[in-house]
Length: 258
Figure 1 (cartoon, one colour):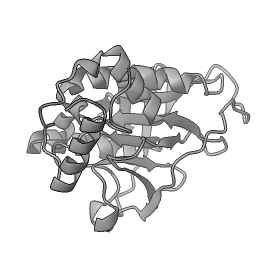
Figure 2 (tube, helix red, strand yellow):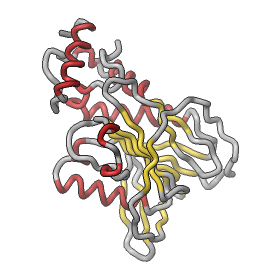
Figure 3 (tube, one colour):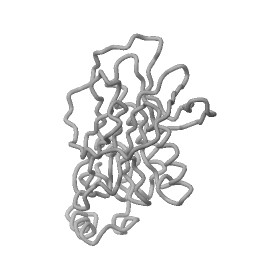
Figure 4 (spheres, rainbow, N blue to C red):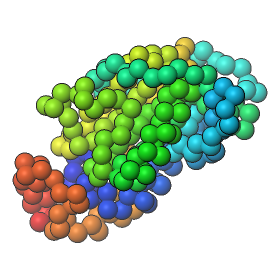
């Protein structure tokens, strides 16, 4: 059974702990079907980050794509030709450059993927901790993909919020930072009333992007978590804008949930 919402179901935010856990498993599985043989998508492995001669830091991305040094680097991939959403391309805020190496189990991390949680966006401590983690990735030479499907908390993505026009802002976002284009960052709008987009997952500079199809991930979470049992008579938290609340009320009535 599918959610009554065409894209992101705002009621899933209340169950975000288990939704988040499912998302990263489904995303790993989807990506591993596309990656070349010498790349692997892995979940929550500790990644050591070395900044010049400073002490190492331990980062735990939700998921990362790492390179197997034992095998040759292939210029050909099995990436499927799936259409992806069109981004806003924004200039990156200047940052101090420094040399970073990311090492895990003898492999080089190519791309880190983060599904944001309320804990990354709420409270000074949570936001500061995520900002440090984000800064280390941005200066590491790895690609970073941030997927924000929760409405709670403040904006924390790498893309500068102040450069996004007000009329283009949406409740959900995806941000893609490519290590071979450090002066820009891609922002993908995720409106409440539309299906979730297909987003590019950058790999090595000479390779075609993988594609992460977000809507099937949420559909699988909804089905496997039996979230059709959700009480749609109640309003979601946090509350929607008046305009979106009216739209949601009409939608749920049409689908027999109210």
